[in-house]
Amino acid sequence: MALPSSKALLDAVLDISSGATLRSTLQRIVDNAAALTDARYAAIAVRGRKGDVEEFVYYGIDDEVADEIPNFPEGKGLFGHMLEHPDVLRLTDMSQHSSSAGLPPGHPPMHSFLGAPLHVAGTKFGQLYITEKLGGKEFTEEDEALVEALAAAAGVAVDNARSRELRQALALTEDRERIARDLHDLVIQRLFATGMSLQALVRSTSLEESAKSRLDGAIDELDKTVKQIRQTIFALQDSSPEGLRARVIAEFEAFRSTYDCAAELVFQGPVDAAVPERVMTHAVAVVRELLSNVAKHSHAPEVDVLVKVVGDELTVTVTDNGVGFAEPPHRRGLANVARRAEAYSGLFTIEPVEPRGTRARWSVFLPIPTAS
Image 1 (cartoon, rainbow, N blue to C red):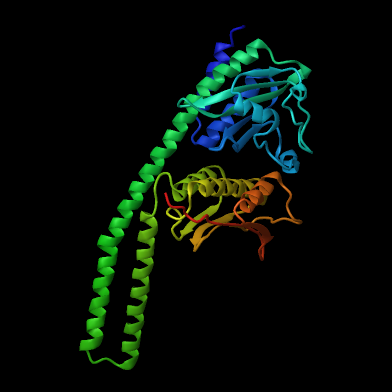
Image 2: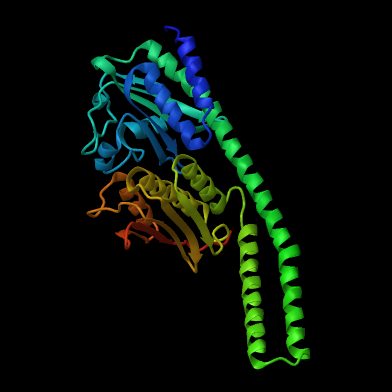
């Protein structure tokens, strides 16, 4: 087998390792895989816990074409074969493989194919695919060696990116706990003391009724403020690095680092305690897709994200004041968001808001916990 170009491969590995987030690292992997092998298209299919495709990151298909494709790979056909048989596979024509199920409507034609497994920390993470060698050529043994070497280096880069995000989440959790302590020990106690002083002043001093009324109003406002701060403390403490709150914050910060706008993120209810892992995975993917949709299509100067749990319902709402849409959307990503809602008897809606913008709302019913 021919040896891969060490200089090109080293440059690719260095570029992949510079990814700031897991998502950007995956994107750099597919970008470099295509460049190294002269491929028109490249992709990574990330395995879910049940062996399905949890996330799909691609290169070579522009947004307009991607919007017309109804589904990304769901772990069936040739992609499913690769997930079940994680070996390097090189084909002249992918449609001729016995597991091929064809391409969905609107998908660009693909013939030559090269796939390799991607392992992270010794476990199966997903598959790296490269298709359609430029010039109608076949992928070579050198391409295969490049992809195998790149996949090995990519596994290390992905592991580092995940560890980096976990450390950031831990640091964020520590900051939140410190802020919660400060709010309780300093702010609430001072407000409480001020309220007690005002109440004593009302009882012990001969005041006109108008002055008493103003003082009573101020005391009521202090009470409301203390209650709001207590709710904030609860929200700050109701978080873990592996919980929904931390994962959504990571997606939100990744969005803010690449899209210049005034963005606000709000949590309501026990979003960590009430949402099980299997629903959490869907919710994080929904936040990522809706924010990606805003970045690609809305041109919005302001974006608001609300994640809340009320009773047995989880709701994710993303509102922007961008250009809106002229007709019901049919983009592939939004179709996937709708399917994620249907999986839990939920609903996904997207509608214009006045005077300008769009509101996307995704809600699901939380499964009833079972006794262990």
